[in-house]
Image (tube, helix red, strand yellow):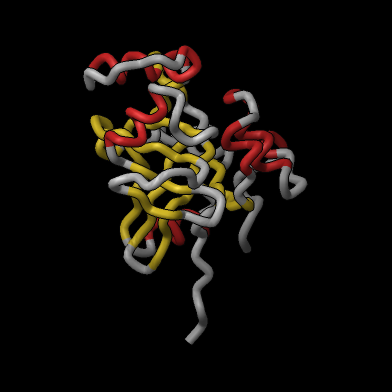
Length: 187
């Protein structure tokens, strides 16, 4: 039986032909991928909200202006009322999933409270919702050329301007994503 390479801790980039309004031109960071499915956070879809809006809704005291002004992302179409924080692995949070040695996914209030006070992780991305796939679904979509997978790059996740992340993630493997056509990819 052939072993399966799962795509944990990688980016999947929407191919130009993917027209689904939830995923067109997106970069998704895969936090979990296995035989039962996948969970990822879209990292290049900012909402109109700022993190200060979330703090207000949750009645969290804020002393960090940088945190107050941080973007909030639309992480995907599933559970859009729930917050997900991708961050450098600092702290001991109530509900965290280590994705790799470099990145953790946390869903508990305590990380937001620490960020609001400037005492949380140095690098973070806050998203509402996540992208989810059932068992084998993502693999089928990749085989149908909906997605291109690339290695994770912390600079893309935290430092690259949002509107450049789609191109930058593809450039990591030498691909100009704008020049790809529908039949490109897996054969």
